[in-house]
Length: 267
Image (tube, rainbow, N blue to C red; front, side, top):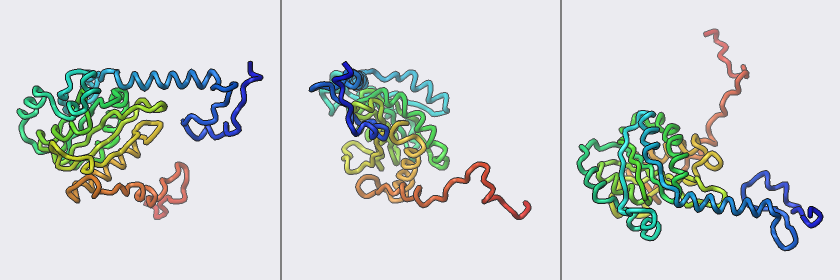
């Protein structure tokens, strides 16, 4: 059987990417192993869309990290309605809207929302590590409670931020799963959130996961955008992400055991 398997000459390039390249050929078809791997990835992507968000576990983990939490639900009553009616995922349910309206006005600088989106896997796995990475950088910010949102679209954060009188809302939401990334998290920032904000008024950081944009780098970008959003009073097309330039200009970290930069004045 192996006599019929033709290896692709680009096979060495596979070490540099998760993309499906240089898979080889068996006759006119794929070899069995990459075909089975494709079917597995497709099943994982479908599961990511339909798997429910474990909100109880999220609330427990957030409170263990000393975050205050809120539980909200969009106007989509279930997953079927959520997938067929994207507009329902952009607005709160009547119960959630009424509950948020009763919260005392504390006018936080920023409110984080964790939404299931199209991948509850991403929200469950990536949101809390990202919050842990960025929270120490926001020591001088007044943070509101973290809202955990079910059946959520990106724009749901606008209504949540408006009702909580937040200056900025940050939506952490599961992105549409790909065949190699069923657990990718997206970050969306909106200054002066209110119902009716357009996508042109937001900034997005995409593919947050250990295999993509890792937590420290995502937190660096998020802190940069938050800082400049507050300074300029806007997000969206008018706010450019130049955070990579800061990393490029930063001095290299000292190497452990390297005494070349040691203090020589005897102190």
